[in-house]
Image 1 (cartoon, one colour):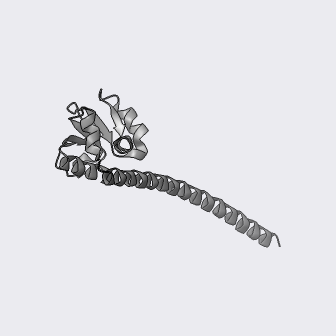
Image 2: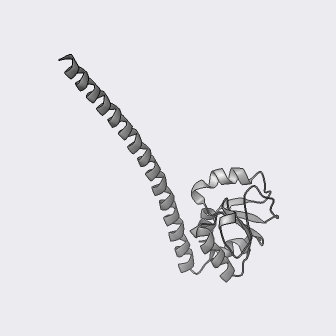
Image 3: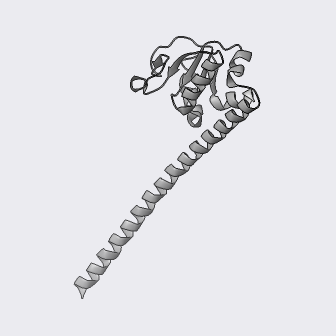
Length: 159
């Protein structure tokens, strides 16, 4: 009888430990998914606004031209950055260089620097990784004296 009681107790303890571990794992996955949803929602609204800007006869290049920014650096070579480089190029504004942690693994028409490398000066740094803007701005503000802005600011001010 004692052996059966111990066996039941070990089974129940194992079951409880398994349930708690499973719930912790699921909780972490839910947190990760919420961050991803937030990131992609922000991406969607920015791209939607960009389309709206273009449909109204404007473009983001005007933001840089109107504010006197001639030497532009872009941080984060993601979909926004590549689309921005193409859009600026088509509208007579050239990107001086890009900055990305994975610079040695990426290809671009312009020079790509790692954030820790020495870089030439720029009139403005546009952060294309909009969901991490605050963190990136803090890191870059130690290296640059020029404005560091999120692409979301550009696209909302352009329209």
